[in-house]
Image (cartoon, rainbow, N blue to C red; front, side, top):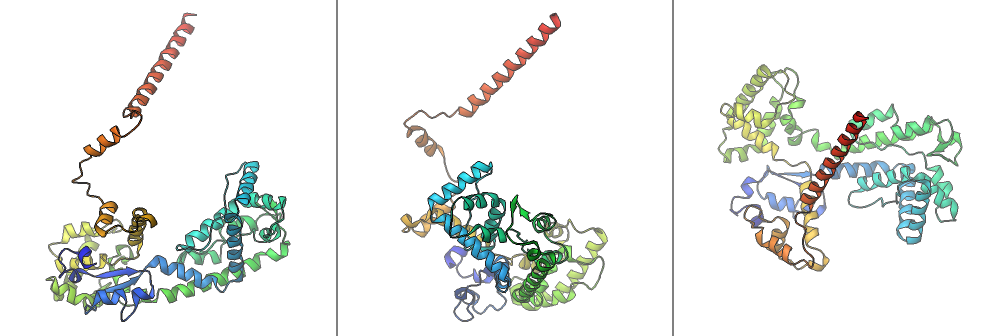
Length: 413
């Protein structure tokens, strides 16, 4: 890791500000975890738990106490197993969709690494392919009864964030609202087996409000470190969160950040005593010159005020280096798995690096083009698109001449 992070092995740790992890114990262990080993004696290095992973854990905590969510999860899992294990069942389901004139939507798995994405995809396939599923189950007896599916036909929207899900306490989601406003006990044209009073609005709202409250409580617990400390003070770089006019706004955040990142800034040559004064100057200058700061970016501010506030802008650079998620790392692992498969598990690190990120600037494609052109059994049609465009142009010209000849004939008559 030292060799890959920085060519100068002695200075890579001096440049490390923070690292995002998925929250596994082997990564976040206080004594022998990867983050602890990377930090060493640098107490200012932050270990950030990926926000995307936190949201999924928050959702899992909330649905554990909801029996309706457990039933829904069991139903979607049973549907996936029923069709995944049998090619005959999948073929019959596709035929049902074909008879109805619908696009085939095969049930997908619920669990996995990205549990929320898999759950929403499985739920979307279930709701949009409800008619096809019911028609298939009515044709033959199966282990999953159509009655159980009909009872779960009225889906509910899951909360997406702390602020976004609170509005659903007073207003149901679009799909749930469409079901509740339907005067008949039907969903996607299929009559539901459950009586109307069992699916009343009061019962649905009670279950939904309880789920939202549990989700918000779990989110406050999972994101407790964002309500105070360094991560809370790091919102200083969010210009959209600045008040309209307040000469004292952000002063406490600056003091907290200087106290935490002081050794790092001092090692890079920044003067810590000047940072509060430069912050006040930068803040007053932006308020005077830009009444509407919604469209301002830090690169623009650095170009305009870099000479007057160099030390404070170094602090801003440090804050902008803090990662919020592990999306880039997961993308790298995805690319690595495409090259290093089970049949090619013996690839060396340098070979894998060359396959994952080839050097485009110094690559000469002539030899590859000649090999591609000569290795084919048939003749390569290198001018295929040009001939196609030329043929299309000729057709348009012929149509134009034909229309002009027809108009001329009509005028002659």
